[in-house]
Image 1 (cartoon, rainbow, N blue to C red):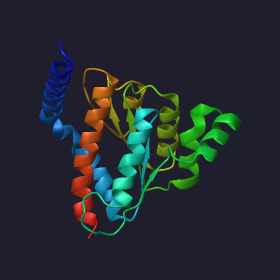
Image 2: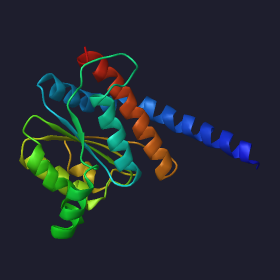
Image 3: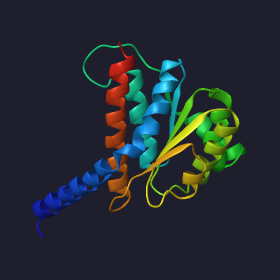
Image 4: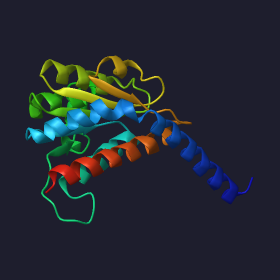
Length: 191
């Protein structure tokens, strides 16, 4: 198979997996509702993930704060918990890597906020701990997960499991879903 054929096959596979996710999109209704309610009430959306999902958390938080489309609008409250290297490394060193997000949730989040987690496995201990901490504080937790949802599926208020052929595919679909949600919410609240 040539390079070009491999690219085309990969894109066809992505389209199939996106079609599967689109067929189950009703499962996203509670995720969108929670995020909408948080913004309506002046709360903050907090985003977290590991590896490529950390980059996606940063990317999506930026869409809310800066602008999703070229139109001017007001900034919306969103923070990626994956960006402060001093905080992340100090927490990992002093408290353990499992606490890097939970500690930030404890310091920054308030009841009525929403924690949005991205995980391709659903088994990242630092995301599980963050979800547990958030829920004890009255912070709603939603997650876009891969695989079978892992341990996180049982620790969050609402989860949507993305099926795909491998980690990269799951991340691509999670980002595409988040873009669709951001499109809806930034149009609604960014006026």
